[in-house]
Image: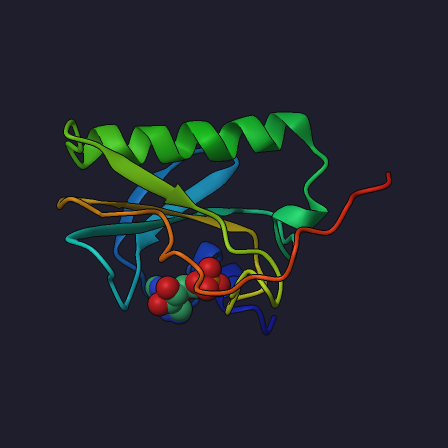
Length: 123
Ligand code: AMP
């Protein structure tokens, strides 16, 4: 098994576990970007949110994130981030959410200085 998050789920690699249920495991990010930075990962391997089609699993992932925020006492607010694929800046190809909080997190993204016009979408 080569996926690092699969190995954490299997207990083969250490992690600071925060929360677990039948579908998801939450543990602290090793390079925290905020006082609280917890990853919520699915126990089954999916590459990213782009591959997610299982509605109950999607619910479990979101509820896992909310449970982490409550356990971490983030009453003043928190942010959920899902990086997907290359343009999303995803580094670990195993579906996960970042729960961030513990300080004001500022704007969601720095404003882009010059952006190309938005692509029109044809489904
Ligand atoms: P992403 O860019 O969304 O794929 O983020 C992956 C995150 O996983 C990064 O914030 C890393 O710091 C974190 N990470 C990588 N390896 C580990 C690990 N062994 N334990 C905890 N967090 C990790």
